[in-house]
Length: 188
Image 1 (cartoon, one colour):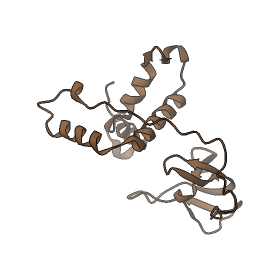
Image 2 (spheres, one colour):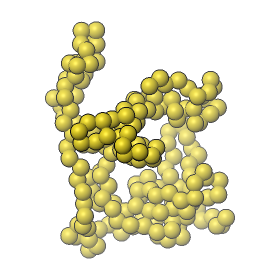
Image 3 (tube, helix red, strand yellow):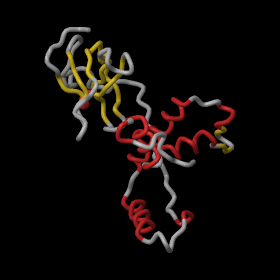
Image 4 (cartoon, helix red, strand yellow):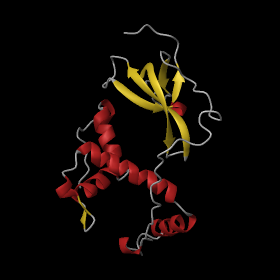
Protein backbone atom coordinates (compact mmCIF):
# COMPACT_ATOMS: atom_id res chain seq x y z
CA UNK A 1 0.00 0.00 0.00
CA UNK A 2 1.38 3.38 -0.96
CA UNK A 3 0.96 5.99 1.73
CA UNK A 4 0.93 9.51 0.49
CA UNK A 5 -0.86 12.43 2.10
CA UNK A 6 -4.30 13.18 0.70
CA UNK A 7 -3.48 16.88 0.60
CA UNK A 8 -0.19 18.68 0.16
CA UNK A 9 -0.62 20.89 3.25
CA UNK A 10 -1.18 18.48 6.15
CA UNK A 11 -0.96 21.22 8.77
CA UNK A 12 -4.29 22.73 7.71
CA UNK A 13 -6.17 19.47 7.18
CA UNK A 14 -6.56 17.21 10.21
CA UNK A 15 -7.94 14.38 8.05
CA UNK A 16 -4.77 14.30 5.96
CA UNK A 17 -2.63 14.40 9.12
CA UNK A 18 -4.62 11.49 10.53
CA UNK A 19 -4.17 9.51 7.31
CA UNK A 20 -0.44 10.24 7.33
CA UNK A 21 -0.19 9.09 10.95
CA UNK A 22 -1.89 5.81 9.99
CA UNK A 23 0.73 5.39 7.28
CA UNK A 24 3.69 6.45 9.45
CA UNK A 25 2.85 3.91 12.16
CA UNK A 26 2.06 1.05 9.77
CA UNK A 27 -1.62 0.92 10.67
CA UNK A 28 -2.76 1.58 7.10
CA UNK A 29 -0.63 -1.36 5.94
CA UNK A 30 -2.08 -3.55 8.70
CA UNK A 31 -5.65 -2.68 7.67
CA UNK A 32 -4.79 -3.34 4.02
CA UNK A 33 -3.25 -6.70 4.93
CA UNK A 34 -6.30 -7.63 7.00
CA UNK A 35 -8.64 -6.73 4.13
CA UNK A 36 -6.81 -9.18 1.83
CA UNK A 37 -5.90 -11.85 4.39
CA UNK A 38 -6.63 -15.43 3.45
CA UNK A 39 -5.64 -18.72 5.08
CA UNK A 40 -7.52 -21.95 5.87
CA UNK A 41 -9.11 -20.39 8.98
CA UNK A 42 -10.00 -16.92 7.68
CA UNK A 43 -10.77 -15.49 4.25
CA UNK A 44 -11.38 -11.73 4.37
CA UNK A 45 -12.71 -11.70 0.81
CA UNK A 46 -15.52 -14.09 1.68
CA UNK A 47 -16.28 -12.27 4.93
CA UNK A 48 -17.11 -8.96 3.16
CA UNK A 49 -15.56 -7.00 6.01
CA UNK A 50 -16.68 -3.42 6.52
CA UNK A 51 -14.17 -0.64 7.15
CA UNK A 52 -15.22 -0.37 10.80
CA UNK A 53 -14.69 -4.12 11.28
CA UNK A 54 -11.22 -3.90 9.73
CA UNK A 55 -10.32 -1.00 12.02
CA UNK A 56 -11.63 -2.91 15.03
CA UNK A 57 -9.60 -6.00 14.08
CA UNK A 58 -6.50 -3.82 13.73
CA UNK A 59 -7.18 -2.29 17.15
CA UNK A 60 -7.54 -5.71 18.78
CA UNK A 61 -4.32 -6.95 17.17
CA UNK A 62 -2.41 -3.88 18.36
CA UNK A 63 -3.81 -4.32 21.88
CA UNK A 64 -2.79 -7.98 21.85
CA UNK A 65 0.68 -7.00 20.68
CA UNK A 66 0.97 -4.67 23.68
CA UNK A 67 0.11 -7.41 26.18
CA UNK A 68 2.28 -9.99 24.38
CA UNK A 69 5.54 -8.04 24.48
CA UNK A 70 8.52 -9.70 26.10
CA UNK A 71 12.18 -8.82 26.44
CA UNK A 72 13.50 -11.58 24.17
CA UNK A 73 11.23 -10.52 21.33
CA UNK A 74 12.03 -6.80 21.75
CA UNK A 75 15.77 -7.52 21.85
CA UNK A 76 15.45 -9.48 18.61
CA UNK A 77 13.57 -6.69 16.87
CA UNK A 78 16.02 -4.06 18.16
CA UNK A 79 18.86 -6.15 16.78
CA UNK A 80 17.16 -6.11 13.37
CA UNK A 81 16.62 -2.34 13.58
CA UNK A 82 20.25 -1.68 14.51
CA UNK A 83 21.66 -4.04 11.88
CA UNK A 84 19.13 -3.43 9.10
CA UNK A 85 21.71 -3.74 6.31
CA UNK A 86 22.71 -7.25 7.36
CA UNK A 87 19.23 -8.62 8.08
CA UNK A 88 16.12 -9.32 6.05
CA UNK A 89 12.49 -9.32 7.04
CA UNK A 90 12.58 -13.14 7.15
CA UNK A 91 15.07 -12.88 10.02
CA UNK A 92 12.56 -11.15 12.31
CA UNK A 93 11.67 -13.17 15.40
CA UNK A 94 8.25 -14.82 15.29
CA UNK A 95 5.57 -13.22 17.40
CA UNK A 96 3.23 -15.33 19.52
CA UNK A 97 0.24 -13.28 20.63
CA UNK A 98 -1.48 -14.19 23.86
CA UNK A 99 -5.07 -15.32 23.39
CA UNK A 100 -7.75 -12.72 23.99
CA UNK A 101 -9.28 -12.77 27.43
CA UNK A 102 -13.06 -12.74 27.36
CA UNK A 103 -14.76 -11.64 30.51
CA UNK A 104 -18.32 -12.85 30.68
CA UNK A 105 -19.05 -12.07 34.29
CA UNK A 106 -18.51 -9.23 36.68
CA UNK A 107 -15.74 -9.58 39.26
CA UNK A 108 -16.84 -11.29 42.46
CA UNK A 109 -16.18 -8.11 44.45
CA UNK A 110 -18.65 -6.05 42.37
CA UNK A 111 -20.14 -3.71 43.57
CA UNK A 112 -18.89 -3.83 47.17
CA UNK A 113 -15.16 -3.33 46.53
CA UNK A 114 -15.49 -1.21 43.41
CA UNK A 115 -14.42 2.42 43.35
CA UNK A 116 -17.33 4.82 43.17
CA UNK A 117 -17.80 6.40 39.75
CA UNK A 118 -16.34 9.91 39.44
CA UNK A 119 -19.08 11.11 37.10
CA UNK A 120 -22.85 10.82 37.28
CA UNK A 121 -25.69 11.27 34.82
CA UNK A 122 -25.96 14.93 33.88
CA UNK A 123 -22.32 15.82 34.65
CA UNK A 124 -20.48 17.86 32.02
CA UNK A 125 -17.18 16.30 31.02
CA UNK A 126 -14.51 16.58 28.37
CA UNK A 127 -11.76 14.33 27.14
CA UNK A 128 -8.44 15.18 28.73
CA UNK A 129 -6.45 17.30 26.28
CA UNK A 130 -3.50 15.81 24.46
CA UNK A 131 -0.17 17.64 24.36
CA UNK A 132 -0.33 20.46 21.80
CA UNK A 133 -4.09 19.94 21.37
CA UNK A 134 -6.05 21.91 23.94
CA UNK A 135 -9.33 21.50 22.03
CA UNK A 136 -11.19 18.29 22.92
CA UNK A 137 -14.74 17.03 22.65
CA UNK A 138 -17.07 17.64 25.54
CA UNK A 139 -20.56 16.63 26.46
CA UNK A 140 -22.93 15.41 29.11
CA UNK A 141 -22.84 12.02 30.81
CA UNK A 142 -25.87 9.96 29.77
CA UNK A 143 -24.93 6.80 31.62
CA UNK A 144 -22.12 4.52 32.69
CA UNK A 145 -21.31 0.85 32.86
CA UNK A 146 -18.63 -1.30 34.43
CA UNK A 147 -16.51 -3.03 31.80
CA UNK A 148 -13.26 -4.91 31.52
CA UNK A 149 -10.61 -2.49 30.24
CA UNK A 150 -8.39 -4.84 28.29
CA UNK A 151 -5.74 -2.15 27.83
CA UNK A 152 -5.42 -1.95 31.63
CA UNK A 153 -6.16 -5.58 32.45
CA UNK A 154 -8.80 -4.60 35.00
CA UNK A 155 -12.42 -3.55 35.37
CA UNK A 156 -13.15 0.19 35.02
CA UNK A 157 -16.05 2.59 34.64
CA UNK A 158 -16.91 3.54 31.08
CA UNK A 159 -19.26 6.39 30.25
CA UNK A 160 -21.74 7.13 27.48
CA UNK A 161 -21.40 10.80 26.53
CA UNK A 162 -23.88 12.92 24.56
CA UNK A 163 -21.54 15.27 22.73
CA UNK A 164 -22.05 18.96 22.06
CA UNK A 165 -23.51 19.78 18.66
CA UNK A 166 -20.11 21.05 17.50
CA UNK A 167 -18.78 17.47 17.47
CA UNK A 168 -18.77 15.30 14.36
CA UNK A 169 -20.73 12.53 16.12
CA UNK A 170 -23.66 12.58 18.55
CA UNK A 171 -22.46 10.13 21.19
CA UNK A 172 -19.28 8.41 22.24
CA UNK A 173 -17.95 6.29 25.07
CA UNK A 174 -14.91 6.99 27.21
CA UNK A 175 -13.03 5.36 30.05
CA UNK A 176 -13.14 7.29 33.31
CA UNK A 177 -9.38 7.93 33.21
CA UNK A 178 -9.76 9.77 29.88
CA UNK A 179 -12.32 12.29 31.15
CA UNK A 180 -12.26 15.36 33.34
CA UNK A 181 -15.01 17.51 34.84
CA UNK A 182 -16.15 20.66 33.11
CA UNK A 183 -17.87 23.57 34.71
CA UNK A 184 -21.59 23.17 34.35
CA UNK A 185 -22.82 24.30 30.96
CA UNK A 186 -26.28 24.84 29.63
CA UNK A 187 -27.45 21.91 27.58
CA UNK A 188 -27.54 22.92 23.88
